[in-house]
Length: 124
Length: 110
Image (tube, rainbow over all chains, first blue to last red; front, side, top):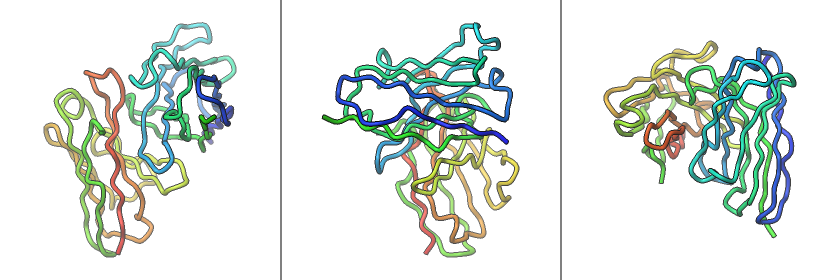
């Protein structure tokens, strides 16, 4: 059974940093692209970043970012530990959202499994 | 303002057929396949339709997807109360070099 378990969310001040993790199990992690998708309270879904499978744990994986987070967020993965990461720096109030990790099954926007989400709140 | 345009709301009575549209451009829907998601508030989204019209295993055939040019549609037939949820379309966009979503459509079963 595929499982995605996010962690690392919490309350942070504007300008601060957080690192989200997504522990994956139940599938061959290294062969699937993964993404982070967020949802601000009461709002719609917003894609944040995606990274391709990368093969081996030391293989450089291509990554992509939404304009709203480019230069501030970094996506990465450790295929040896079946874990996806999102390093978030220079956080702003508008980054407040539930962050989901999602496994791609069809292209970059077809995610067949999602985590339960982790809440990030940016406030002073 | 979302890159893909969906109606903010839709409604129908049990047993009816409803459609939800998703309008884009040549850089997104016109060039890439569309995926649809269903989300009950407070829970994670669920893949409903992928590659424009394919259903993942477990999704009832009451749900169908189609695409023509730069627009896509989700149709739900035999509407049931449990279909009440938010629905989103998504695809890749060449101009933005990223994934774009529609703003979401809240479906109400009257």
